[in-house]
Image (cartoon, rainbow, N blue to C red):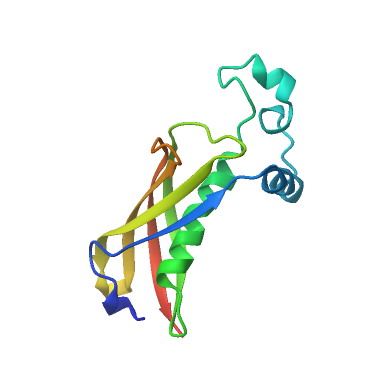
Length: 138
């Protein structure tokens, strides 16, 4: 697909279940061992009542949706700018879906402003975001 194919309203999504393994491997990969993500006993006393996964792991599902939507044999997507709001925690075992929608087009630079929302399996919005992306033709 090419930039011209991505009209306002074009939508895509990506779904992932946050497993214990994914939570642990993400912590190991980035070196973030915050007790919020790993210490069940301490987190039982917190406002969450249990461990929450890393917000960056949650956010990464937006990147997966962007790649799924805009990458083809002819195109690549590059994120240029993002504005993220974490709205609610995501817990180990939650299934989350990132939905991305093209909100505005900037044809002169082949850029798109996308609205992104991540919801968990019960429909709770856990992340709201805006991404400015560039579509590259290869």
